[in-house]
Picture 1: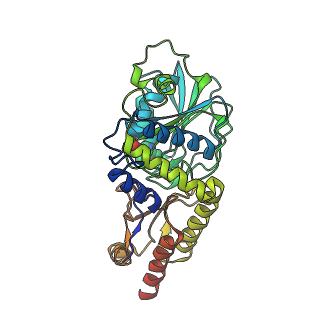
Picture 2: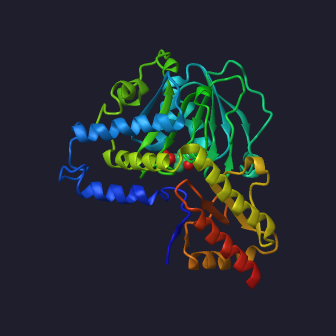
Picture 3: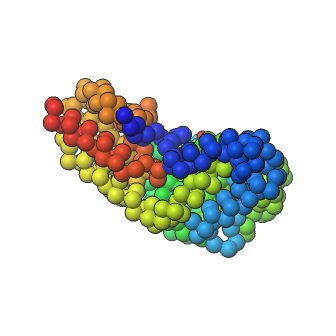
Length: 356
Ligand SMILES: *Cc1c(COP(=O)(O)O)cnc(C)c1O
């Protein structure tokens, strides 16, 4: 039976990425050697890095004055690299969940941090709006997609301050206006590549303004100058990232991906909203993520949760168990997840409603 992979992260990657990576593990670029056992400074691997960085910029329309770097350490290391490089005196953080809280905690090591707003009062099931933002912030940090709670900021905020965004779980899912950000970063394992890799899109003008000394590995300038090869980069995830970027381009790029993502999300949310056994945890359509769809059993049907889980698994739907802090179900419907997988979950929900 075909498995439908709704895992939150690491998560589904295009078959194109998996197959080409598997092949390169055996025989990389006709070298007769594995991509894991050749020098990262070989001409074959440098070509991979160059093409990956170029396609990354092309697909996201990264404007002049910005650099893209690949670094290790995941998004969690970016929680510290961002303030290390950009927080001079004061930064604002929007608290929309666990990841946003962790990012904020790291920033406090580097300067004054103001929590501009929080949705903690309702277990982060909405995006705060209409909050005041001091004009003297070095930056405002946002988490554009809250993987655990299924909320998303789907527009580029215009709040009169420079933005820094954790886009781990919605990068490449929708067009973004990079010019509004000083920094966008994320772990690769949600929409791009296997774990072990993070990306950062950084504004060159925003760098080099700190009085503090920054360790080389944590200084974005090191990776810009070193073209993401200051030290040995995670070669395998970078090879896979390139495959995903080629796949994205071959499939119409970000606009086409966004259209498909909205169709998939609409299909699932419509079923949740119309099926009396289920309830979305995020009420406002505006705040609902098109990447992570969180839902629970509706009031009065809570005891049927195990039954639906069993049916979903029987239909080949893997990874739909909700995060422990939200409960219920979470369907992660990243770029690589085909619409037919969403349809399989929707069909399971319809079948469940008929049976009960
Ligand atoms: C998964 C995730 C992280 C953590 O990423 P790591 O690479 O494990 O450090 C951070 N932020 C968001 C929004 C995530 O979804």
